Length: 297
Length: 239
Image (cartoon, rainbow over all chains, first blue to last red; front, top):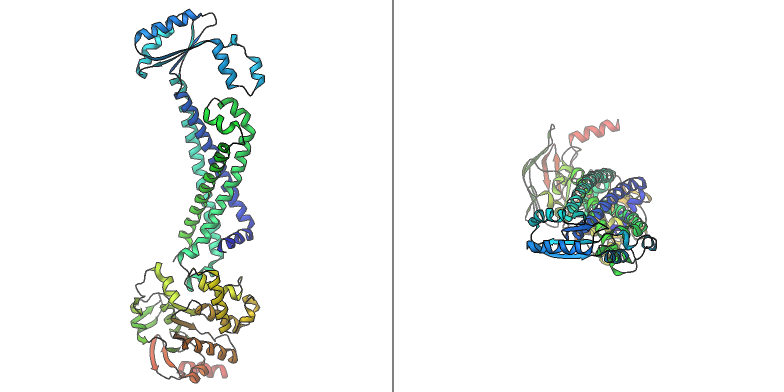
């Protein structure tokens, strides 16, 4: 009954409610987007960290003998944990598997344009420096990619995204708390007489404060639900592109591969719950600050 | 039992509202608190619900020293001591039933218990046919009955009434007094601050007379003694 009263009070001051919900929505939208960006970047990082430490790409004119020769040289150092040769045909097979849902991309690529490669993992990452000159001097080598470089580059980007996102979300959260605090403060002032009566008849501080805390929390939850709907809409819209870029990551392909799976429903529901809880918490904090500032017992 | 031990109350920058009050009120007593305006009657009642704090002395209600009661526990005291206000203090956006139910909602009672008890109390104060009316649709007497119903619905052991008949016509005042007498019969201690000469003189209950913050008279079956100050004001008004 008291929760229904909260809803009535929110409806009686629609502009204040709208201001609070819109602010909360913006905060939760940005928080949700940066949260997803962090999750995706972590998955991408994990994917690259699990890849071979060095990938050696051979020139088109290089032969299988060149690759075998390099394999033998590397094995003779005793510093190599694994070696895997990926021929042009193997590369095409991998490419086809990754892009099986995009016929246009499949049509445009043939084995000729994909390079053969050798995937190298060292027994100790410190040996990579010793192996580098050997690989670069080898016959037929066109390019050497160190996964460490890729991972370091991704890490830098991820850190930057986290910092910028963290600061923006932090500032918007502060702004949301201040706006909820102001609105709840105004409501406390408007209900001054009612609060006074409640105090005089023996209402506990918790009884008086709860509706205000719930009201603040509801602003956050409503904002979170709207932001979730927008984010999910954007994700669904971007899904083909997402699968194109990140489809090779097993978790992402499991979740976004089909929208009718429990995995997708679970992630979408979990994300809604997460945003809803964070929104409720933010709104409640705003109410708590207002109550401690404007309501003395 | 209520006990004031050498209680004084001084508001900042003003003279004492109460000075060195020592008095004891037994359980189940009906006590009138009389005296001219500014005598300290309301301060006396406000001290009992910790709406203000004494500057000196100790106030006990049963085993509770309410002078040192922590702020976080004041609501427990106010559940024990019901209060009826001269200005009713009703919530205008709630019906009679809802205003009275408030006294039980704050105790966390379930809606079935609330409904049963509230209807009983509304019946007791004679407002059964007005239970769905809002305060602005009621007469002053009906509003005061609602205030009384709210104050007693939680079953307080003490009922304070600050000028409950102050805004009412004589007949309605007597109706209110009848209700208070009924409440006393079930063992509730009643302390009523009033200016109503007829009520005090007719009922012949214990009467504590305050003047300038001091107890000047405490009689078992007291009468309303008009003070020189009040007499002067009355004569001035008559002329």
